Image (cartoon, helix red, strand yellow):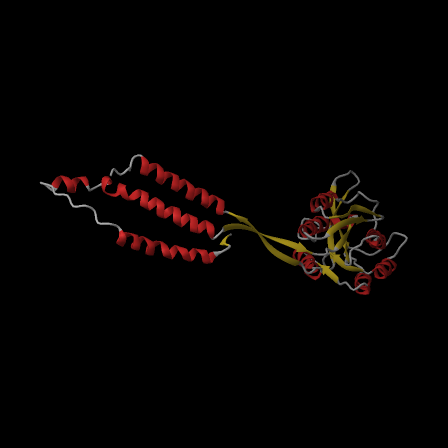
Length: 328
């Protein structure tokens, strides 16, 4: 960015051609010399030799222009912005039970959930995000942090079999809520994804939801899985892979009760597209207003222009006293 702090000074440039014209009018007429032949005079006055005597005057004019520009105080600026925002604390609770290997989503429920969740985390620039994994038990995979790279890295490490099998939905939610208990943020959210119904753990989903409600934590629940039955890979008696078809059994009524009791929403994802759309909707629902303050830092540049004027003046004086010196 560029500006003049005192642009009105540039109006003095209008006086330069006026003063030049006045000076020209007042210049005394040169003496008249008589020559026997004019051809030699015409040849001597043409080409480079014809305009060289005017170089000092041009340089003097440029010195005046540069001086006026310097007096106008040219400045360059860098525009910046300060973002003032209070971020949201978000805990994602993700089911890693064996049924999450079902291939009704591509390549399976777990990998689809991890991929979409990673995109969700990448878009939360001003928020702290954490990660809880649950199956038969629940544990914190990533504490609340603003380092999105750490969260996505730990999210990628989640896999079936890292926890005893089962579906402890209540424990997963309770663990996430406990992580948010000490949070100073005014807005706290849990996004819980599962493909089944609670069958393990000391705390049920409704009890965990009551804990969340008491602490002001909003819960979004996602049931993932197609309608009817889904194909799941298992190992046969010899350790080789084979597929079995299992019924899709999502406790939607409980997940809806958990979400609505805390001011959140329940969503059903039956394919990759709907799962991505759900996270996009949650992303839009949980946005804080960002206050942006724009400001510009200006730096003075008149010094460089004055140096240019000084250089031109020195060059003019040198030329007048050497190459373009006029004899009396």
